[in-house]
Image 1: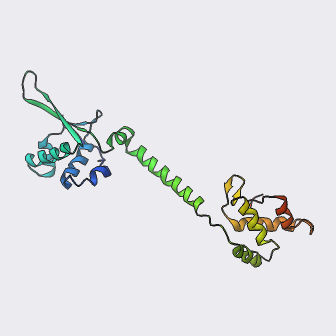
Image 2: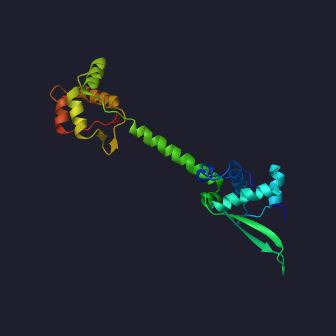
Image 3: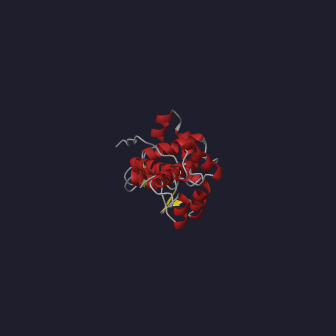
Length: 207
């Protein structure tokens, strides 16, 4: 029975960057992964690879020997009944992080990569917040012509490590605008600075 290759070949970084392997041996490793059966074995012959790459069987044998010598694959043989004639050679992958990929499949690993990428993007968004200076808050308040005290604003959120409840502040300007709106709704005796002293938390622009 002729072994049919999978659509994908897998070659790990461990194999790709191994200086003890020739480029052709690395290519053969990838081809072997594409031919693995359900048991994680490849039974393609040197003749098969010879025809595939237009190389002699002796050359293919050298590539296989490279992979064996460096511990990436192992080979074993089955024999025709009652004789020493080789019936079939099997190649097994020993290392190169291949088993997990085979068990879960290309699609699952692709999903995981997307998930990790999204998580990283979310974390980067959270890490991008930069605490404002008093001067920056003061300038922004002047632009909006509000009565928010920049010093009180900074002191208040410094004491909270710029946390809004249990979450890190995302937009300090939104917080300023919230203080501004709340200030406009109060009378002159209940200023923003007074509310600061009472420990009020005005969030990221949300009520």
